[in-house]
Image (cartoon, rainbow, N blue to C red):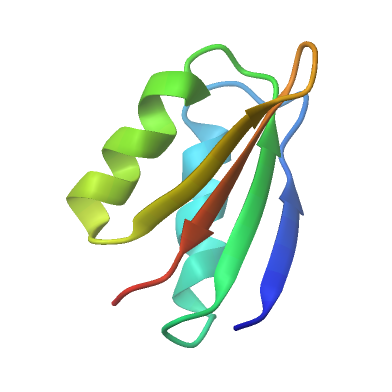
Length: 75
């Protein structure tokens, strides 16, 4: 498993999730993407995207104004 990073700080909904979806498409199944975002909507959007797209949200962390989401590509 390889972890890739995507910094989406400063971007507003729906851009963090759109960029996450695009970057996950290029990864092999089993790899992970760590998304960093400061958009308040990402707290709802990222888990919803993972559930709808069939990926696993492994971890969510708060970093004082920004959050990171560790997503495993499952499809």
